[in-house]
Length: 447
Length: 150
Ligand code: HEM
Ligand code: HEM
Ligand SMILES: [Fe+2]
Image 1 (tube, each protein chain N blue to C red):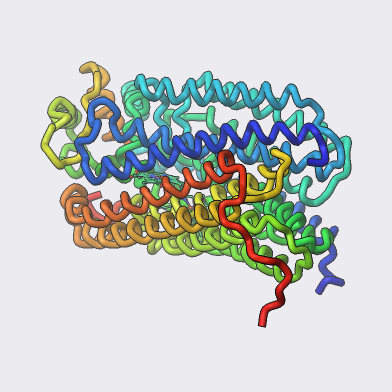
Image 2: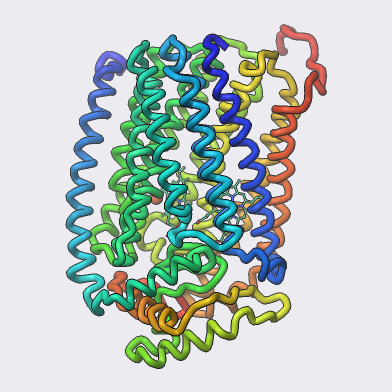
């Protein structure tokens, strides 16, 4: 650790990992309710568990981003964070807000817009925390060295916080409500968060591969340009059937098809940098997560996104298990794995020790990634059958669902693998204090 | 290529292009806003009752089991066209009776079948909810869903 104040990232990562645990346990319960629907149906109905699952996801990813910013902004700006105290106050507000939200969901107090169900006071708390955060990192950034990595990171963070304003805008007209709702949801994951992702990935590549900064930064501008050029008008792929004009069918189809480009570019970027890099960094697990993240993001967001993004296809698949399949792999690859890459890289530094337990950590990567991939396949099969029987043949929803039990059972099984992987990850980060598998002798050239 | 595409050029293309797309997007959003209000949802007035119904829909977090116009959770049927499916789109009284009967019968308690919870909803609110669903059902959704199954 070059700067003392980077240490605040540690607290953010701890809270994020705890929420990650809650998120996947909630997911597992949801998966089980699909298999055995009477489970807890009165005490803890599906909709409540689902709010906890999705909200915990979003909050922990954001906490991870905030922590990552507190870690990398000092290092890039070459100075301490403006105020460590503010950073902890921000975290405290977010923790209180999160506990408050979960508590009120459990007693049935919540809003009713998907992902934005937080009670109003929690939304305000998030707003206050966002303002504190922006002030804190911006003052650090402005006073220090400016790099493309921090430029892009700051821009992504500012814009995503600004978009939070749409969380407060809930018109009585349902179609307007939906249109503005996407200004948070789509413009987060398919525009502003991509900027954050590119910046963090760039930072990790810089540290892990030792490639020249100039090369990395040029790539980054190209990546984020393709992200925003496609992603902003790509919002149109959600404006096909909600009361918005018909021209979105063409704008949405064309521009969201181009949304594949930045994800392909990020994957290529990561592999090219590793190929060019001369550094033999000991943290191999961080490298695995970085490459894995960009690859799975390409499949989850790029390939599975394109699968249902053309309006002629989306007419049939809209709001089926296909959507759930895509949502899971995209979030996992782009944002879960990226955060775990950052944790894997930064935790040993923050705890002032060598990056050991690489093998356990890498095993958790394959367990989680294998589980999420399998979940995506089962949901894609379920969604294909659902699309055919319900949207083409015209069978009723519940009759179709009755035919899909086998897929939901397999989804639950893959969920078990994901939970085990997540627990193993947390264990390898926090508990183990010595190398479990001894590495072989170094520097033996291959045949 | 590295000669033509310097870092500062790449950065300027990024900033300039992004501003261009934001402007286009804002203009189209404003146009869509008007389209929604004047055309797509103009089939039925947005009365106080419909507003109350939307509030009831939100308070009970129906969206985290059902889809509405294809958005939401995938655990329970689409409700954007439920009034059509029930054949009561043009009959407010019958719509209320059908909905009320359905809600009172939940949870079904049938073993192995997905359960819909019981909700505390007054008669006034239930009527409003039915109106909200009728209002949503008359939206011009470009002929989505493909059939009444939703
Ligand atoms: C990392 C980036 C992405 C994430 C995290 C993500 C996540 C999601 C989620 C969670 C939903 C469901 C929203 C809801 O509840 O209604 C969704 C819907 C959708 N996504 Fe993505 N997505 C990403 C990128 C993409 C890309 C690049 C494309 C296109 C190439 C795409 C195409 C779509 C489409 C068409 C839908 C609507 C599905 C429907 O009609 O039901 N997504 N996405
Ligand atoms: C133990 C593993 C998991 C299981 C069993 C699971 C299960 C589920 C279930 C059953 C739903 C509700 C789908 C519906 O409405 O019918 C859901 C929603 C969702 N989950 Fe998971 N989940 C798991 C892990 C994850 C992970 C790791 C992520 C993030 C990468 C995630 C992100 C989401 C999202 C974004 C939604 C909303 C999807 C949408 O609206 O399209 N889940 N999950
Ligand atoms: Fe999108």
